[in-house]
Image 1 (cartoon, rainbow, N blue to C red):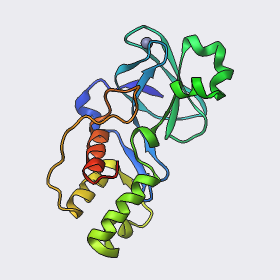
Image 2: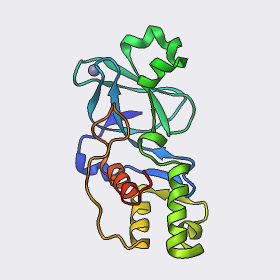
Image 3: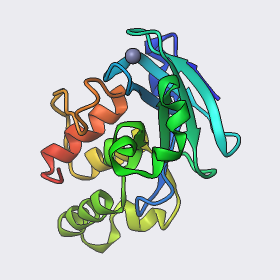
Image 4: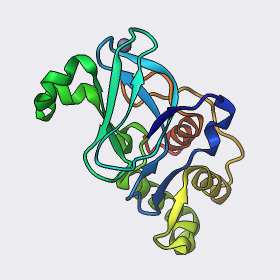
Length: 191
Ligand SMILES: [Zn+2]
């Protein structure tokens, strides 16, 4: 299921979770991209994957194209956004060029992955020794807001810059908590 989040104030309520090592990313708030007019669709969307294959459609607010959202497995760490116009070319999705337009990998887009978490762990280790919070939590699930708060309090950071940080040319806006996370990673020189 994919639905527009009508109230931007509610964005923070949509969970983005991962394990302490950065694996098993599960996102429930996502941006959308129209590969037909090559623009980001306005707003953010609630994403809940119930099955393999098509999970929903989004109309592009710019060109009116219907975007089919599909997933290849039961996880919520990536999605394909395929404009109606590409439907007959569905079999091409395996090809890199088309795939690069329609596949959105949230491990890259949100920079929540084993690589960034490993770097973060290293910083915590050098600042706090072996008993930092990631070790204490020992392979449990983290929500992004809590993760940001825990890192900030562990490293005694009071505030973060509020720069708009982009990780993918297709998008010019990411959910607020993702942007906060990216600012944190930048302050720590992880990205
Ligand atoms: Zn469009």
